[in-house]
Length: 271
Image (cartoon, rainbow, N blue to C red; front, side, top):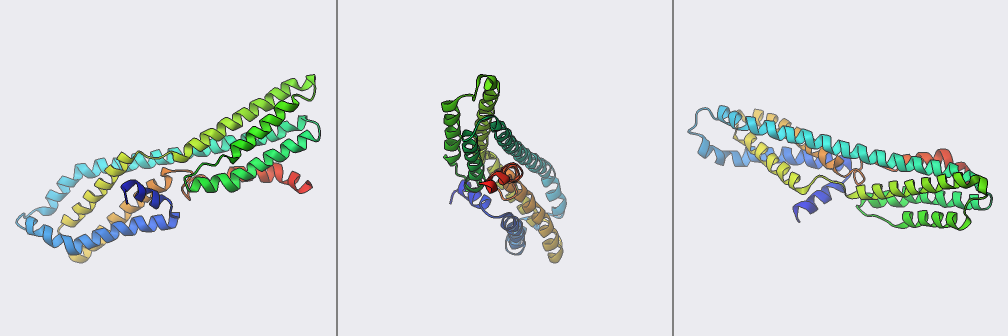
């Protein structure tokens, strides 16, 4: 298993599973090191009378830069999530605006276009977002928007007095299509792999520094477990927010569901 495939597998887990795996892994690694690896380290470190001071001095600068990296990546992952959420909200608002704009068309064209747009919304909710969770992109939504565009182009404006409104409907459809493409592009948004390597190396060094400290065995297990647990939680946050459309705590289809419930559901019941 490659490092990238390991990251993909971790991000496919539920939020609870991911948090438990990250935190328990680092706690277990620290405790195993204290029990098994530490005695071998002390064969090298035993002659040094001020081991804790030296370890603290050596880890001071490293810990500062590593903590800064963790903080910056956490903020970057959160900002990515917020940007994707904004894209989703813009697309959902575009659906609502387009749906209301279709009221200018006569029957039966109006009902047909409204049905197609409702079908698109349900497709996004029930097909697009489940596919996003798996890292996939589907074409069904784009095909549905193209069908709406063709139907509008075939009929043109209902009359000359509504040409401006007809143009606005076409612009709304174009903006909706653009918002969809931006959402699809965000499926693969992620932190570069090279930064994950740096995070992994920094985590290993942090755990090794904990192994080298001189203290009583139970205190070593307790303090080492607390530090490594928080390290696992920080990495969990970055992993969970790294891919906003794939994570369980990222961006979901709630905005589209809200538009469907408040704007479209009654029309479906009428039919």
